[in-house]
Each structure stands twice: as C-alpha cells, then as structure tokens.
Image 1 (cartoon, rainbow, N blue to C red):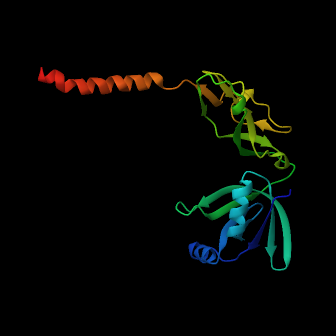
Image 2 (tube, one colour):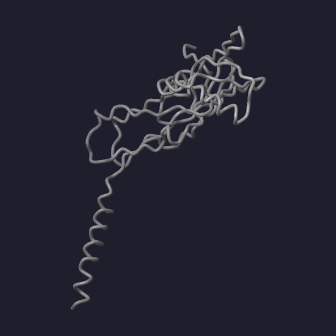
Image 3 (cartoon, one colour):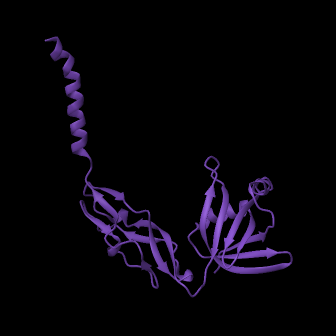
Length: 207
C-alpha cells in the first residue's frame, strides 16, 4: 500500500463547518468503518492525488488525532466536485479488510489501435469501466482491451477479456466493451436526399 493520504480528525460538523474548512483550504471528509469519523484533508494534496492516481485504488489513509497517528486501508466511496471549478468538495472513504474481497469499478483502456487494419469501421467504446471483485491489494489500475484484431461489425465483450490474477469480472460476460461499427454513410445519404427534395419543392410549386 504505497498510496498515502493524510487526514486529521475534526470535531465540528455541519454545512457551516464544511464551508469554514473550504475557506481554509481544507477538504471535508467522512470515514466509514466500525464507527463514523469526520476528517479534513489538505485540498491541494487531495486534488493532486486524485488527478494523478484516480480514486479506484487502495489508499493508506494516515489519520491524525492529536499526537497519535493511525494508518488504515481505505477506498473512496464517493467524491463530490464543484461543478464549475472542478475542485473536490467532499470525500467519503470506507475502511476495508485486506482479507475480504471488494467490488470496485476499474477504467477500461483501449490498446493496439495503431496496429489495427483500416477497414473503414469506427471504434465505438460502449463501457468505459467494468466492475471487478478482488482483494483490496489486487485492485488493478486499469483493464486493457486489445483492439488490434477488431474488425467491422464485431465487438469485444467482457467475456473475451482476461482478468488479472486474483481478479474476477462482476460485469456480465455478454456485455460489449467496444465495437467496430460502419460509418453512417446511409444516414448521410438520406439526409442529402431530403435536403435536395426540400430545395426542389419551391420550383415544383411554381410550376
């Protein structure tokens, strides 16, 4: 567990307290476990971490209370963002057991597009993330999908993927992840015909 965030236990709660924390450059957070603990984090440190590492990975949360420190394995349950600034407003963490499997969403990353034969098809990503079940230490950062052999009118489903060691897919096996589709030539041609008919209508009315 080499991904570390530092948090401090806070006693004040409520919307007013949360606003004061944000004015001070702190990020309100809650840790759910055996008990519920209110926390605060440095907002810049947290934002830099989430921008760099994402938020689906196992985190060592170093919780400070007075002079004591405790390191806990946690996952992010939810992050609320400012819709205009894009900065985090609130984070919910939940403590996990390293011996119990968890279900998390992992991003899908397409690879092999440069090696793919140009058959005129367009790559359409259907799933941008898949759900997996595994121990917290085995959570993959991403699931790579090789599309180098994907041809027109075919798809790659979850069942076609090979999960990393210790990882099982929760997303149904028949769910398509990515597909190669034909360009919308017929639709464009139909639109051109409609445009041509619309242009011809005034002349016909004049006759």
